[in-house]
Length: 80
Image (cartoon, rainbow, N blue to C red; front, side, top):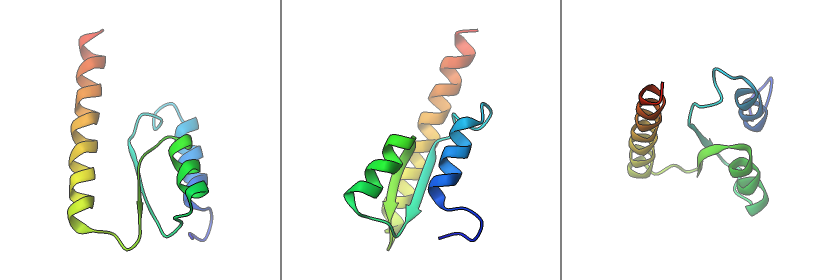
């Protein structure tokens, strides 16, 4: 839990901001109940990771997020 706002508040704020809305969010949290995971996914989290984090899984998720983001940028630039 962060001091000023929790992770979900950050997700909601990012998704409301037109500049940040397309950024793939990877949430790492200790909150792992099915309801909490569903809330994160429904809010637009790209990938929901629970602690303790597995380094190989994190690397794989980061690699996929970067590749997907690049593909989205290519699609946007080619449709202009």
